[in-house]
Amino acid sequence: MISIKLEDSKTAAKSSPSGNKVTGDGGGKSATKRRQGMIFSVIVGSVIVHVIALILFGLWTVARYWKQPEAVFEVKKLVKIPPRIPEQKMNLLQHEAMAPKPVFTDKLASIRPIDFALPDLPTVDMDQMLPLDPSELISDQLAGLVGSAGLGSGWGSGLKGLGGNGDGKGMSFFGMQAKGERIVLLFDVSSSVVNKALSLGVPLNQVKEETLKLIEGLPITAKFSMIQFTQNYKSFSPGLLAATDGNKNRARVWVNQEWVESGTMSGRGVVSNPRGLAAVLEETFKMQPDLIFLISDASFQWRIGGGISDIPYADLKRLLAKLQADLATPAVIKFIGFQPKSEDAKEWKRLIRRSGGEFQILKRD
Image (cartoon, rainbow, N blue to C red; front, side, top):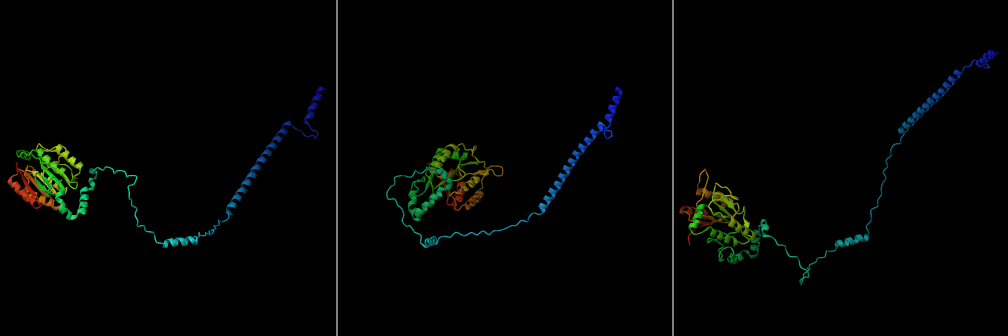
């Protein structure tokens, strides 16, 4: 009995009221497939909907681009009304333009000192005014003030401070009278001149004193310079200096410190010179002097051609003629000779005679 019941229950479980056979595994698989198909359908539909939306948006964008309205430019006329000047103001301006301008002829003048005073003028160093050429300025002013007639009566007394005796003969150097405003002093300090000066009883200190006396007596309108030479030479200044107190003091220091007494020249400021006096004269005439004092024994040599020889007077004559021709007015040469040879003195008198020069032999007192 028991076995029969079990068989019947299995048979009932495998059959259905409709007579169809249903298995548990087959029903689960079909439900899963249905769910998967539904999800796939939803995804495909969503993609299709988005694609369609993108296509429609693209068509709308393109259609909007091609259907943009054309640009229209409009120019509006700006009307400005210029400002009007009141008629009364125009009439006033026209009246002022026609009226004459006032002219003041009266000048203000003070009839008594005022309570305040102007500051003192600054002190000006005259040495700094050298580039202004004060000699020319003062000489022009003097000429304009006194004229040619005034110079005739005042020349003699006006030259008392030029180293002379105030008698109208100008300056004096070793007793030689001269006039000039652009002065160059040439000193031959070779051993022969030094020895001859000593033999005459004229020591070099006396030459210094005469030189400084001449320079101290120069007026502000004058200019000066100095050159010492043997074969070589040394200049006090490359150009003429105005005779100011500062430049006179410089000349005093230069004479006391740089004066050559040994008969030879070398060292600082000395120019090597194989042409002797010829080169010294060229350097002198570059300063455009109108008066030259030359102190020497009238014997000059150079080293042209290899050896020492006397400078030919024919060469000196040609050189002086050329140098004098380059000046507006020939320079007057005053020659002071220390025991010159008669032949040399004769030749030098001929060389300087045309320019109004003078040759004087310094003799023992």
